[in-house]
Image 1: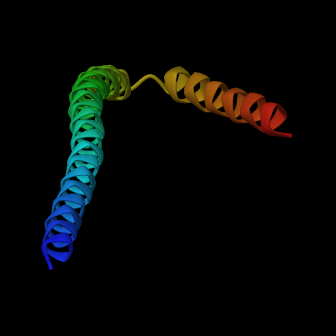
Image 2: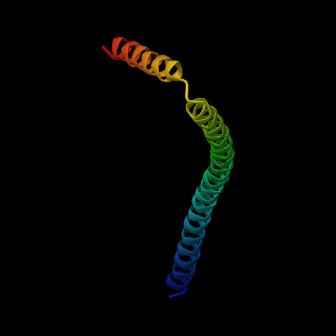
Image 3: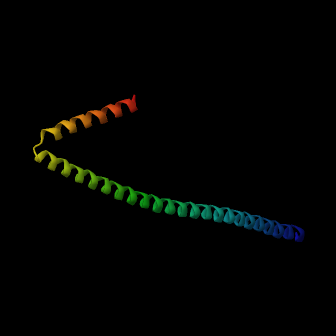
Length: 107
C-alpha cells in the first residue's frame, strides 16, 4: 500500500510536469504567433502610410494636370473669340494630325 501511494504521487507529479511542459510549449508557440502578427500589423501600417502618400502625390499631379487643361482651354476660347478663320483651320489640321499619330501608334 505504501508502494502504491508513492507510485500514485509519482504519477501525479509526472502528469503535472507533462501538463506544465505542454503549457509552456503552447505558451511559447502562442508568443511566436503573436510576434508574427505584430510584425504583420506593423507592415500593414507602413504599407498604408506609403499608399496614402502615393495617393496624395497622385491627387497633386491630377490637380496640376487639370489646371493645365483649364488654362489651355481658356487660351483656345480666347483664340476663337478673336474671330480669325485661320485659327479654326490650324486647329482642325492640328487635331487631325494628332489623331493620325495616335492611330499609327496604336496600330
